[in-house]
Amino acid sequence: MTDLLGDARRVPSGRGLFFAAHHPLVLLVLLVVVVAVVLVLSRRGR
Image 1 (cartoon, rainbow, N blue to C red):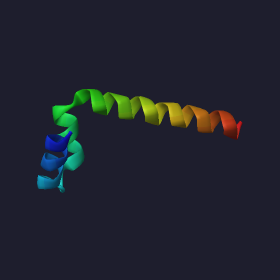
Image 2: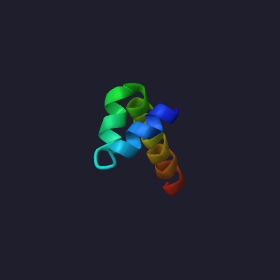
Image 3: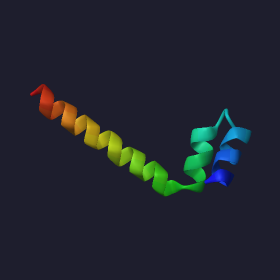
């Protein structure tokens, strides 16, 4: 984790893209979380 944090600090501008590029699973997890949140909010709204 220390190496990942160090790389993220070295590239603050494209931190998200850099992290996702090296860890596609992270991008998939974030996508799933966003979809889940949207579904929960839509259910609560209705």
